[in-house]
Image (cartoon, rainbow, N blue to C red; front, side, top):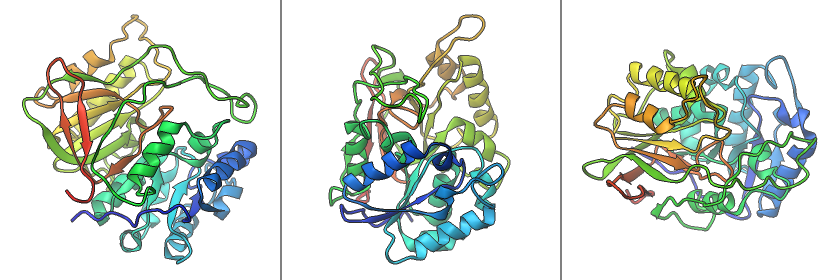
Length: 341
């Protein structure tokens, strides 16, 4: 049974959790800017102790990080948890998380990148929808704040507008993958990119495909394969995102998912814009051909979505139901069905 978390409201209190990279310590100016931006959205923002820590490969001992999350979820004054940033080490924290507590709390968990494993495991083990959405440093910490599309998507999908609604995920139009080094070069908004990827049908489907949204970062999904935390939805709309990956690495990671059975019970595949793309040594650059070659032939494929490492970015309700229509010669249509489904 799917359960949606309590909707956020404009006077909500959100805890900021840093279970992976110690980026809040390494980039204090950008972190403070992100906290201010969230407060300007109307939230009361409470950074947790992990946001002021840097210990070994992460911010704290994995058990301590899980305990910190538990305290935030049990705190009546806390309405939701947003990640400070991603990284690589959240997988060390997962064995210490009390999933019953997470489900019972019914509070929104928001993040992406390294948070991919937490979001999917929350949805699969507890039935609670979690949000693949903007984080404090990476999105809210932009020089001019989060892009308007990012803000609007976040408001709509987390219930910040006061209601849950069925809605079609749209193309933001302008986007950017310009690199500005945090706390050194990010004193201005990143420049929109001319051209680049568009929302498109890579492989048409015979009918509209309905399933459960499952996925996120290609790199993090790879980390979970062979662990208890690799648990694709049986009727999954698999969504994938990455950046700075060449087509040969993209092909290898897709092949890993296929050989691990991720696509066996899927109903469709959604792929985010690939920021900072680069060619193979052969000069090959066709990511769509890679998708057609490796994703099983019966699955419809849509690409160019503003998922994850994309500026601006959509907020995806992991564990919720959605419908994908990929008609030949037409742009794809992804409908988020909301709790009414």
